[in-house]
Every structure is written in structure tokens, then in C-alpha cells.
Image (cartoon, rainbow, N blue to C red; front, side):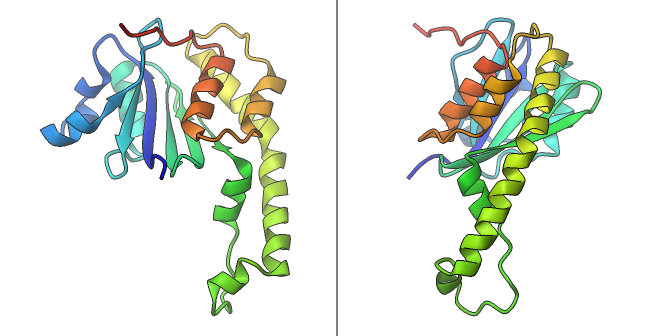
Length: 195
């Protein structure tokens, strides 16, 4: 079983867990937060269990840090929805692992009595194919949004559109690793090794 929860990426001079948006967390919940190795320039990544982070907190964290923030909503390490917000309130979103995202997003017809039969039907396969094509068609705009967000974060404009698109279409075993690779591709400095 993989990780389900949120991975939050932001910049701050102080530890991100000190942000007022986390004041409501109890001591036990704060101890459960996993900090990834930091990146130069104050960039920090925190991994939270489900129920701790909400998308609405992005704006408050941007306000506290004074820098763009993004978060990945991860499900069982298989699929994630990444949402970024810059200091002007501009948002971008992108799915990681489009095949599984498409399976999650396919709308089940109202007249389906047995979802297990629906999931193996030709109708489901066709609906899945259409949803996957829709998500794939959004990748160029998603990649451009990610690149604009990184530029707003002060990262040198080195991110290649084609590389970002490639990552958004890839299928890493763990989407947390794919999220980290996406940050690398967007030009954020590599994480520093911990002693």
C-alpha cells in the first residue's frame, strides 16, 4: 500500500510547519509530518497524511511565505493532482499518472447497478479512452502553467516545455517521485543531501 495524503512545496526562511495554517494541528499530527530534504533557497517539502491539508490553504500559505506554493494530492502513491498558486493568485493544476487519473474521473452512468461489471465493460473502456484523451489534450496548457508558476517563483526559465509535458505523461511507480522530478524539471535546485 502506498502513501495517501499531501505533499506541500513552498519557500520560507522559517520551517513551514511554523506557518499559521498549521496551528490547528496537534502535537501528534505534527510529529507525523515527514520533511523531505530541503532545496537551496529555502524551498521545503512536507508530506502530510490525509485530512491535514486542504486546497483552500494554498492561498494562506502563499501569503505567509510571500512565495508561490504547490501541493500534490496523492492517492496510494499511484495518482496525484498537483495544484500551484503564485503570489498574484494565479493557479495551475496537472494530473500525475494520466491513466489512473482518467479511471478516477470517468463518470459512471446513473443506470449502472453493478460497478464491477461496469469497470470491465466495453462502455467503460470507451469512456476511459475518451477521458484519457481529454487529459492528454490538457497537458501542454498544464505544462505551460507549471512553467509560468516556476518563473513566478524566481526560478530561471530553463524548464523545457517538452520535458515538463513528458513528465506529466509519464508513469512512475510512485507519484511522489514523479512530483520531485517535476520540481527538478521546472528548474528548482536539487534537494540537498541530509547528514
